Image 1: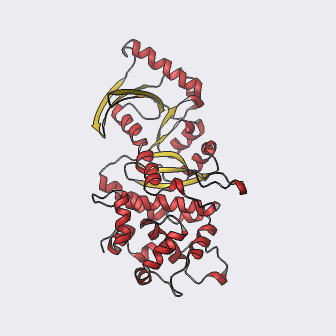
Image 2: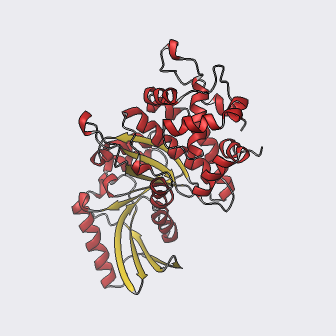
Image 3: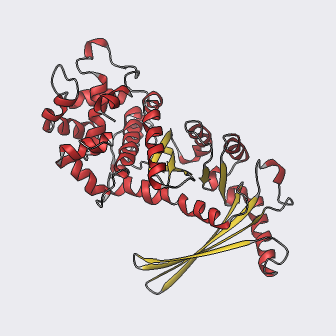
Length: 380
C-alpha cells in the first residue's frame, strides 16, 4: 500500500483532543508513532526524538502544517485515545496482511494461539494501578498479532479470552489455548465461529484432566489394542539440545466427565517432550481435548504452533522491544503502546530478509527506504 492508504486507516478515528490543541493532524501523529516504534522508540519521548531526527522524511510524507510535534503531543494522544477504537483502525490493514502472508507461506491452515502477557513494571501502586496484562490472538505461522484485550490481572484471562475472540475471524482456523482458557463456553464460541480448538488440560479442570490421564494410561497398558490411536514422533537437534516429541491422538471416550457439555469434542491428545541438554534429560507430558478429527500430525502441528506466541512474539517483545521494562503507567497509553509494539512486530515479521527482528528495527532507524518499505509492504 501507499502512504496515503496507510493514512486512510485512521481517517475515521475520533480525535480525543480539544480543538484548541489540534495543531498537528491526528493521522500524522499516529503514523509517526508507528514509524518511531518500528525504528526502535519505546514511548512518547523516543517517538518525539525520532520525529525530530527524521523531520525531512516525515514532512515529505505526512501533513504537518505546524512543524514536527514535541513529546507532549505524542503523550497526550496516546493517553487520550480509546484503545478499543484505536485497535479497530488496524482491522482492515491486518486482514490484508493476513491474506498476503497466507498466500506467501502456502499454508492453507491457520493456527491462532491465544495467550496472555504481563508488563511487569507498568504498575503504579500510588494510584492503585496494577500491572497491565493483555491477552492476544497470534497467527503463529504468519507472525501476526491480530487482536489484543487488556486486563488488570492474569486471573481475568477467562473473561478476556471471549472478548478477544470476538475481534477476529475464526473461520477455518485451529485455535489453541493454555489450560486457563479451557472452558466450555470458550469451546462453544470457537465452534460457533467456524473454527476448531485444541485446549490444554491442567488443574483448573482437575476431574477432566485426571480422567484423560487415566484413560490414556489404560490404553498404553494394552498398547492401544482397544482404541483407534495414532502416534507421531519428531526429533530436532539444535541450540545445544536434542528434543524428541511424541504425539498420541485418539477418539475422546463418551465416558469422560461432562463429555456432552464440550461442544465439538472429538479427540484427546498427549504431547510428550524429551529434551537432552548438557547430558541431562528432562521430560514433560501434556494432555489436551480437541474438536479435531483424527490426524495426529495435524494435532502435533497445532500443539507445536502454540509455542509460537511465546517464542515468536512474547520473547521478542521482552528482549528486543524491552517491553517488560516499560515505565509507561497511564492506563490508555500503556495499552496503546503495547498494541503498537505488537503491530510493528507483525510488520517486521513480514520482511523477507535474513536480518533478525533487532536488525530490522535498526535498519528502519538507519534507512528511510527500509522504513517505508516495512510500513507499506511495497518497494520504494
